[in-house]
Image 1: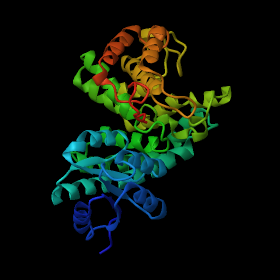
Image 2: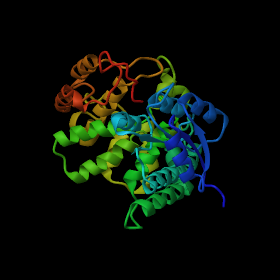
Image 3: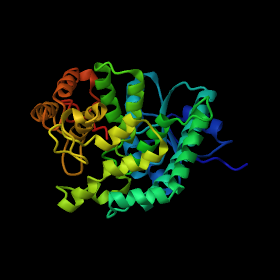
Length: 383
């Protein structure tokens, strides 16, 4: 029987490592390592689809190894196998891109189920990459938005590819086989897009998190909050057509480069338009870079002309940008971020929403840890 993939088991204890090897070897090709350094050496020399890893080991600690794995090859799935004492670290590991965690002592059914789900997600990622490559052919860097619209109208291939992926996800995640699970697709798509940039990994997930905090404060209807979840995960889909050269550039973009980057909200809206998603989601994708004073893009909307949910996402998006390290600068401090929001209330951002968001930031339990926000703690930025 052909094996279903290559799994690396990393644990400095022989017993758990050998037990897991015996469980998995009938289904998968198994590699083992008793410390993080050996694990990284294996990953760089052998094909690996998935890693199961303890966090507390001799040598490099699990979180550091996880970050190095994702930096080397973000397509490798990681499952954390951990004792109760390191449960908090396991949850932190998910923020760095781990698929899931399992507590020791593990049972066979649980670990097989988690590994199968992880391998299925990896297959879906591969399908999404084909879909994204198809869109990338249509969205050229020098292509005008009107030309992109014409190309999408004339080419149904990428729409068919999208629907195929949607429906496969729906079959696995929905009792109604005809219902497309947009949230799951959006989550997978966001992860696939952000895997290319170690600095922005899970950017959309964090924007989703902070957007949800604002929405809860505003007592928004559940249906709108559900649509907003999808919208935050898809808000940057238009960046499919933007070169990594611009995304990773140190220093300011030239006027031409900036004009290319500014196309992404319009391109994003065009990409999702044929998929018949809600107007709320469409409005966030198109308008999350509008400014309250009318100096934003793409349409220069002013004040309450800007859709309500786009104003929410604009704040969460800006917060994550300011609070994350980038190739050209370090993350800003929490104090400086608050000052920046106060200074730009009524200029870039809805002033009432700024007040609400600053209240949210006053409660440090609401903040995803970042090395520049937690004084004295040598934490890595989440992204």
